[in-house]
Amino acid sequence: MRPAHSPHGLPPWRRAVLKVGSSLLAADGAGLSTRYALGIAEFIAAAHRAGREIVLVSSGAVAAGRALVRSQPETAHGLAARQALAAIGQTSVVALWQRFFDRPVAQVLLTHDDLRNRRRYLNARATLRELLGLGALPVVNENDTVAVDELKLGDNDNLAAIVAALVDADVLMIATDIDGLFTANPRTHSDAVPVEDVPVITPAVIAMAGGAGSTVGTGGMATKVEAAGKAAAAGIPTLLFNGTRADVLRDLSVDRLCGTRFRAEGGRLHARKYWLRHTPGNGGRICVDAGAVRALHGAGASLLPSGVVAVDGDFARGDVADIVDAEGRTIARGLCQYGAVEIRRVAGRKSREIEALLGYSYGETIVHRDDLVVLEGAVSA
Ligand SMILES: Nc1ncnc2c1ncn2[C@@H]1O[C@H](COP(=O)(O)OP(=O)(O)O)[C@@H](O)[C@H]1O
Ligand SMILES: N[C@@H](CCC(=O)OP(=O)(O)O)C(=O)O
Image (cartoon, rainbow, N blue to C red; front, side, top):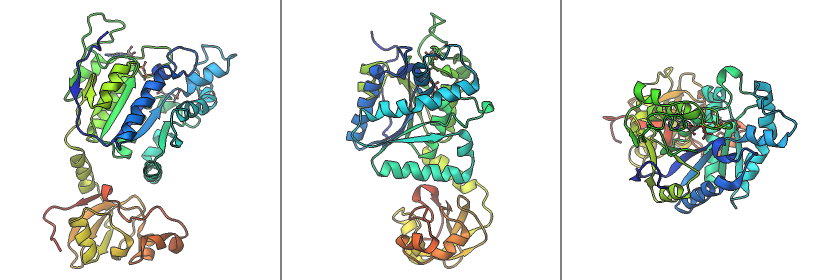
């Protein structure tokens, strides 16, 4: 059978967050199965061969746990029961993915709360970047043990959107058990027609999306549309497709989508630059030398401690500070990997000395180039 959506080309991408739901991983209703995971793993391997990076957001822990604890009644849906089942099943989720890859698979458990706290957000981001740098496959799931009930246990669609912004992904991919978004849930509305392109998420689009289609899936289409909205606001497009279909996954490997594409609101750079430019700082200023000015302007480099001359103000790791030249002109703004006190201690020194000087290190850069906006009209050195 042909997929309901016709194939169309994709924008270029290098880094993707790929979310795989329980509906795919536990499709047979008896815990995790490799039936559809294999096709997904082949897609990931093809992406790796093409020099691309994937952060996998994988559900399936509750479904896996439920199958392992056979005495658990099907009806045990209470929060504590689901949390316990997730803790039991999570090791199987990671083991499932590890069996497909030679490269290391890394378990990353996050809560929405972690990602609202700036310090933990930065730490999570640094770890994910490092994992990608090491060639590992990060496998993210919600940390169901500590997720509290008002945060709606099991919303990995939204978590995936937040992770996509966290790692600065070019695209969010959501693999599910249906061909994409339809005008209504096709399992209950026989007249539903496929939607291939969503330029903007309007109330009409939100109204199309219903609940989960299987006993193991949780959010249904509603959380997928919500997630696409979050990603779009961060400047990231979302692709929604049927991960049970080998033909759809093969097409995706050659940048052809059979499914629904949700467009981003403006460019990714635009969204980031806008945020960095407009987010309130607290008056912190990092004064840099002429070499650093040239590196930031010309080469799009990160700010390293060696280029820092002085620091004004009192700001923390994760705050936005102005970067100023020797004449006091603001040339850039950036999100700092270190607080003011720490930067004063490492100013003018080599990155490799950071650990010895501070007793710890959050990485080589004071401001990473992904977190930096060079201000237009700033004077070139
Ligand atoms: N408008 C819609 N278009 C497509 N699917 C929909 C729609 N509304 C609800 N659904 C349901 O959403 C399901 C996918 O969500 P879900 O079961 O939570 O899967 P996952 O485990 O992949 O997150 C589909 O199987 C379908 O039954
Ligand atoms: N974190 C839980 C539930 C995650 C979740 O959102 O499920 P799904 O709707 O299948 O993506 C688990 O791993 O089972």
